[in-house]
Length: 536
Figure 1: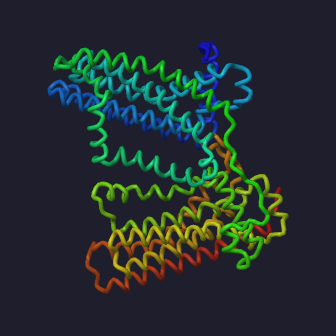
Figure 2: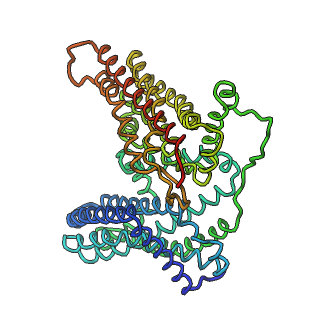
Figure 3: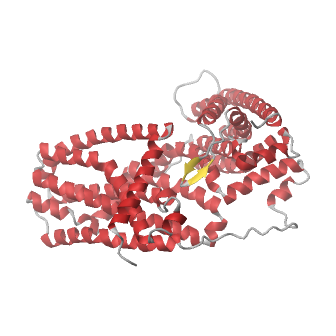
């Protein structure tokens, strides 16, 4: 490994930062993200500044153990925040340069990797500059003192850079494992869905559940992460071990170049290794599970459309990753499960409806745009509009029914839901699961999207926001009566003048009627639109 060239590092970093800026200001979505992020940073900075104003006096009057706990909490929070988002960004896009083939034949890989790392550090420091200055300003204006403010400034910048290096390195490790693992290559859809759910939910649990936060903080206070607190204690004059403070300072300062060197080595291992390719040999005599279930029961054209959708999702799970979004609405319920160790009575139906919305959107929300470059072949093939739309609906409905049933029944039993109430909830969830793909296909045909978007560094055609909005609006209206009556049945919010069975029955029947009407309308409109669609 050779020493990187400073001039080339600056050129690569400057190019990456320019590309980032153009992505932000060159599109409406990017501009909105930039404005929203700026407003959020300003609001958080004000809160941090006010908190730092009172924090200085609090630290001065507190015992050493409290100071150590507060300092460790700040270090763990900042390190975890920066590391988590840098890890995600590295895996998605920042872990490999744009036009890598051309760049890596022009400059050594050390310069390219160092430039990417410098660009990532610039993005992170740029985003956290105002909050860090707010922290320092609050400490100076308050009772913290100038020395504490200087230590906080240097420490915050050092921890931010360390989190960036660690996140970048872990992101490269993740990409390296994904490229070299035959298991991940063969099960990309399952692994991708699990990671996409577990990581964000784990982060939410870490940041929103006090018991988990306290447990992590206790572990951190008995680790080297608490050693920098001795620097603060020495400055405050309330104790502190000079040896520990010196070791902590030297450790952070030495970890930065060591981590950077490790990132350069990992970049070489990741960039110059061909990814493992799963064996996709065609066997004309092989009968898959979908063949055994569908052959002879539906038309060949419909079966092929459904199988094509499943195969595409298995080989390129990023094309349907957007569909997991409804599951994030279960975070509140999961907090209750973690904190109180009980299953909320509303979780069975909520999980079932999230599953229905996810599977409904996965394959049907952009039927025309999802075909991408093969759309002309699809339109001219010997497949009717009705057969094509039916295949898309089946692709979401069949696995959706299985998952929804398991979620509702399993969570319902765990929550102790009465059998009749659980049966009504399961009926509403299953009807929603069957109707959702048909509603989605109608919304997707009404608002198609053919332009690609950058998702995790790949150009992917995702459904339009208008299609999302219409889909969730119609589906929400359909399940609202059944959901409200289910809520009233499992939660004694107020006394009812009639039996709960009548309430559940009325809400369930109303939801079924609206869902069926929406599904029929969406299906018929989509089938007719696909059959008569013409390319410009």
